[in-house]
Each structure stands twice: as structure tokens, then as C-alpha cells.
Length: 405
Image (cartoon, rainbow, N blue to C red; front, side):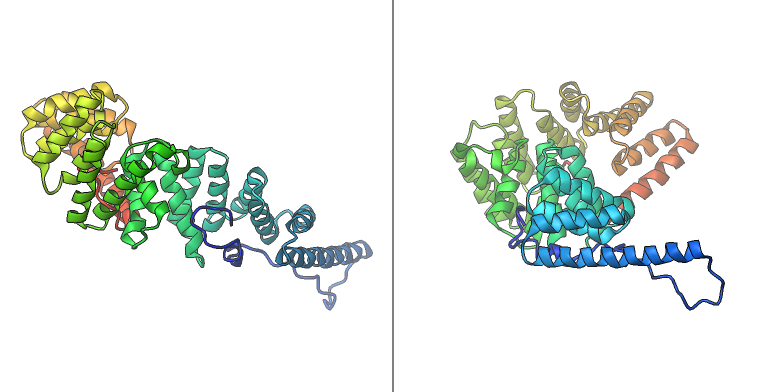
């Protein structure tokens, strides 16, 4: 398979048939005692012959595919699905054959038909997402790849890994860096330290909205250094991670997001040093909203809401669509007794990210403080639901400083 992280061709992938792959319809029984009219008998005979003919087409297609004649296989599978549009197996093999030839649009259409026939088919969703990824349509690809991850790809862990890895790449490409670090960091927790994983971690850690293949040659060493630090961080190897990040900031002290990456690592063990690294990042990038968010988070954790406030408010001004910034402002306002303002800020955070359990947790507190018990109870119930869902989906993701997705 011409796909990042797959070690062989499609041999493994093709071993996985869609769960809803349909066997040919049963032949009509001619032993029935019920009378059958001449027209009905003729139609039954024609149907049986059509089934036999399509079966022969499928057999020829399978032979062509196994012999590596994918063009012939594709033509035969097209004949099969034209004759039997609901034949999931033929659509599946048509898609995988087209995928092997890197005909992404046609392969995507074939997998789309598999998904329509079986909406719970994780493998087909994974392949459709990979085709969409190859076409550069990253938001749509991410939707499919994450849905495939949620459904699972029974019988083939390798396809699931490929889908998960490309989901992380799509997250980075779309600027969802924390989510990308969590997703790609899962591979580190599994002990995967391949150059592809290290490079992908480095791109996300340095907040570069690029695919690893889009990183220029002169930045590759820096990316690998950041990736190694992130890998050690994911593995909870703090001394090795600290050494890697210290080398990174020493070598590239003026490059954007280098100090930020080091600061994120330091948040758990050396928060005072982390704050200094965020300040250095702001000296390089005064409009770096995420540094303000991290600093606000740390001061809130210390109970110093006065120190946190200017950073949270600055983050909102710099990144008005960042739900975390609005949530932090709401927390600070609530602690200051500014309940109506806190509710407004938290509702804006909820609007920007309706699936964040933390927002509902804080919003429930604000509603309760305002005496709006019915609203508070609704927020508590939604927090419970989303928190349970988040814990199920996380399944061992790495922590990313104070900011959680």
C-alpha cells in the first residue's frame, strides 16, 4: 500500500472484508409445491443465470487482483457492481484496487458506496478518509478517520494505525496541535519511535500547520529535535525530554514556538521555569495567544486570579475563537464574583466548543451561583455525559501542558 506507515502492499488490507459483505442472493427454489406462472418462472431463471454470471465475473476479478492485474480487476469489479449495486464485497475490492493505483477520487467513491451500505464499517471509513487525505481535503478526512477510530477496524490493527496516524497529521495540518500531539503521542506510548512518528511529533510540537513532507530541508533537524523531546515527554522520560528541549532552545533560541514547546514540557515539574519560557516566546511572538493561555492556566492553578486575568483577557483579544481563552476568562470572572459576566464568557466558550466537558463543569458552577438551578443541573448532566465520552476516547493519550483538548 502506498501509504505512510504501511510496511507492505495491500495484502494485509485486502484480508479484511467489509462486515456487511453480501453473499450472492440464494437461487430460487424449484422444488416448491406452490404453482409458479410461466412469467415468474422465466424471471426466476433469468435471475439465477444473472447470479451465476456475476459470480463468474467476481471469480475472474479475484484472479486478476491476486495476479496483480489491477486494471483488469477494476474493470471486472465495475461490471459486478453495475449488475449488483448492493454487492458490498465488489465495491470493497474495487476501492482497494483503485487505492493501490493511487486513483484517490475513484477509490473514495467506491469506499463511499461501502459506507452507505454499512455505516458501521470502520475499515471502509478509514480508507475513505485516507483517500480524502490524499486529495488534500483535511477537514473531511479527519471526520472519517476519527469515526473509523471510534468504530474500530476489526481484524486489521495495521489499517487502524494508519488511519490514526493520518488523523494526527490532519490535525496538525488544520492547526489542532494539542489534539495532534495527543493522537500521535499514542504511538509513543506503544513504543513506536520510528522517524515518521518523531517527525510528526516535532511538527506538531513546533505548531507548524504542515505535513512532515512539507517541512523544508533546513528545518528538518530542528523538527526532529523537537520530536525527540515530545517523544520522551509522551513516554514520561522527563530527564531525557528535558535534555532534548534544552538542546533545542540552545540551538534555536529565536525560532517561533521553540520556547513554547519547552514551556509546555516544564509545566508539570518546573512551572516557574515554564512561565519564563512562555515570556521568552512572547518576546519573539507578542501575539502568541497560547502562551498567554498557558500562563493564565498556571496562575489560576496557583489561585492567583489577579495575575491570570490579563493573560486570559489578552488571549481572548488575540484569539477570539479560542474556546479555552473564553473559559479561562469565565473562571476568573466567577472567582471575582462577576457572575453574569462569567456566564456570558462561559456560554461563548460553550458556543465555540459544545463538546468540552470542562466548560459545562464551570458553567454549572456559574449557574448555581446565579440561582439558576435548572440550568445548573442541565450543565452537570452534560458534563457527566461528555466527560465519560472523553475518557473513553482518550485511552491513554499524553498530557500537553495545562491545555487539554
